[in-house]
Length: 184
Length: 129
Image (tube, rainbow over all chains, first blue to last red):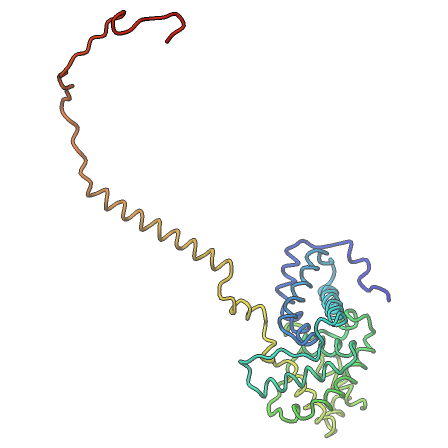
């Protein structure tokens, strides 16, 4: 696969930009990793690893969208390596005694539904729904075309609607939450 | 699965959509149902489950004191100790009675005089000792 970020690595920004990147995207990276690895503590460690790699490699001097996609590509690779290493399967979900049981049940159901998805579909969906990346950013992060992202999102939403039908129907309140741009 | 779903997906994902296509999609009861379910799914996904709250913050709360907190406490203690020491020292020094220097000091008179004579009390040798 052709590296879409080829050519960006020669130019890097100072450490201050890595810190800015951390403050802007830490939560998004963490949310993504939480959904993918299904364990908050592991996600925290992986998030730190992501930004450690960023600080070592330097931030490519490019547009915000390209840098964002580059960052999530690092996170995605780390998450996939982690899952493949078998350290933590995505089926597992952290149990928090403070959370109300229905919340935990829904959380477990979401984790289970996500774990049943193909890796790429899960990444595409989580990057869209939990992180709020645009189709273009997801395409760059996953090495796919925008059309492929559109198609995978549609298919994944349909599958999750089936798998989570009970939880979806139980929702009495919904909010139109824009998942892009400043919402991150 | 149809174009209605695609149009609504694009709409809720902040993608550009054709107004007429969106109007048609939302005029369809199935389209409206899809929109509601898509938003409900998003609500589920964006809600932070109990175990997935920001671990950076929870860890900070769990461990209680960060290195910066400890440094701040140490600095505060140092300042307080310095102030207390200074205050105590100031008060103590105010109470001290400084003795007046004597007007004239005379050496006491000798009570015994010892006279040492060479050859009697000691002898000199070449090379010392």
